[in-house]
Length: 167
Image (tube, rainbow, N blue to C red):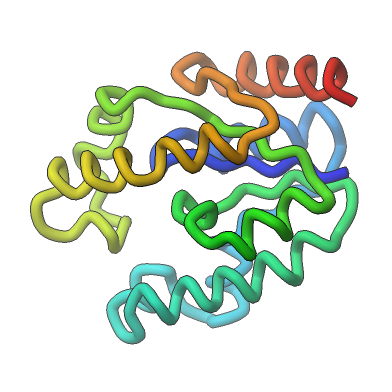
């Protein structure tokens, strides 16, 4: 069974995945890094040259390839949950763990971030709109919801405990 981390950008998915890897020994895969390696360019470059729809198609293809692996920690991109096919694939062989952060935490963490292609323009307005759209999906499709405003080590411990209680 995979541990699938989902949550809004800035929730700490990759950082928590590293902590889970250290504690469980499970292999870790970050979907965005997987796509960047396959495409030999950054997510920002893909968005810039091809657009979001093209990126989402790459993301869905990556989810199909990765979700059939077993005993991995999968760190997803913030928007992976938007696609029903992605949700089904990831849930099929994994526990979906939603790393919940408040909108204030997201705004603080992303205030100076210039690496996220979806945040071009009015960053705060964009974040608020995306957060409002995605929050219900994260909450609906998660098997486990964890407060991600605490230290990554504590988040990892909480996830391990909750998964052992739910299996």
